[in-house]
Image (cartoon, rainbow over all chains, first blue to last red; front, side, top):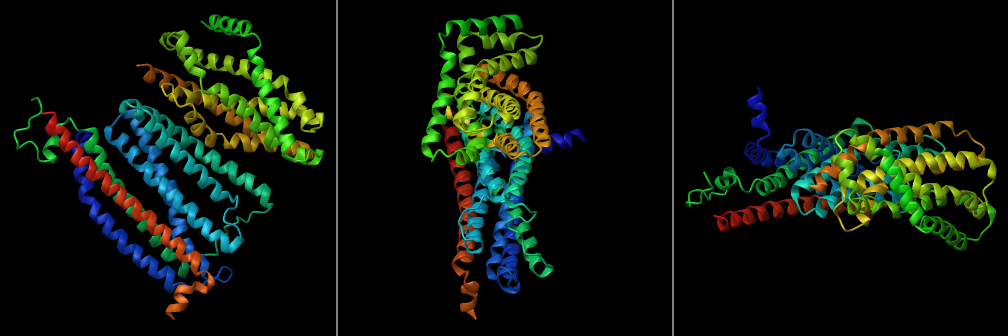
Length: 253
Length: 218
Length: 52
């Protein structure tokens, strides 16, 4: 049992597995994405209140969900990294950050384009948008923190600590921003009050979310492979992997 | 060790030739700037007062946070704090609290003046004081932890970038507490939230500080 | 019919911009990841060879 577990977190093992799952995740994600787009853009009827503009939901909500999910992955990886110091955990945290940041940016942009025709302005201090904005700052801070260290060991430790602090803080931030927004609104209607979702409108959303998640996984796998090569550059399995052992290039035995 | 920390702080204070007043002046000057920035009607000022008060206090503290641990490192106090194997956490916490008191107590002396500048009624003084006290303490604790993380970095604004998003709840609850008390609404729940956040930071911050200083010093 | 599709009930600009930006974002993620992985491969291969 323990051997299986240790095998699981060994870099070469993860490297191979990631490479194997990558094309599948990507492929299925594209298929589901296209299907979801078809359902959302063509099949679903226009909303009663928002007309065709509501269709932005099909990219806005998956982006939002992914931005939060990515941070969850980052946070859990940070906890594992702090507690057990697995290279793979540090690598995952490093790799997820830029991807999560872009999803957050996408969410903010699509939200802005949704808000302009619906509420008249490009930016509203809406609860979710504000939360996402803060999340973007946290991602950027995380990336900046990592970049500021020269030694990768210290960068890992600092980033793991900050990742966990962010994880603990995010629910508090989320709650405080929502509370702050209700003071402004006075009621329980959130500005981006989703149209009451019927299954007709809902199933493409589900598909798009799953497609985004699989895409996220595929991209993490891709970056993870590069990151693992970097971190384990001195090891035999990397030399092996890059086909350099046969050339008589040996690491000290 | 604790006594030594207090003595150290007192030495810095007595030798500082009034430098401890600088943040106070800074605070008052910025308040003036805000007043210049708007038409200084009492209503306008009161409306913006919670936000301004909080932002200004945080800015004043932020200046001190950037070099919080750097100075200790130079004087060798940092090694002593971390190498003392008995009660590292307690010492780190005490050091942070003492520094907080040293930096922010003068700022609280400026609070009555701030009230005058911002046309705030003194009836809400207690609530404001309390919310600022608890809030700045939490802010300071998180800031000290993050400052320890970036101990070796020269770029001082990194700490601020990391710190400010995490402090949004403090600013929200803190300034709303002042705003609510201005309107005569109940502030108990808000103050409790602030207190809760403070307790949370009290628990987490020393660990982060110890962890960060340790790996940064190697 | 196709025109209706592009017009999106008058919201065409916003809907298509959103989808366009999202697509750009996803492609950015993809290409930057690809570039990263490729760059690491060549970099590390060089490093191993030169550090023999």
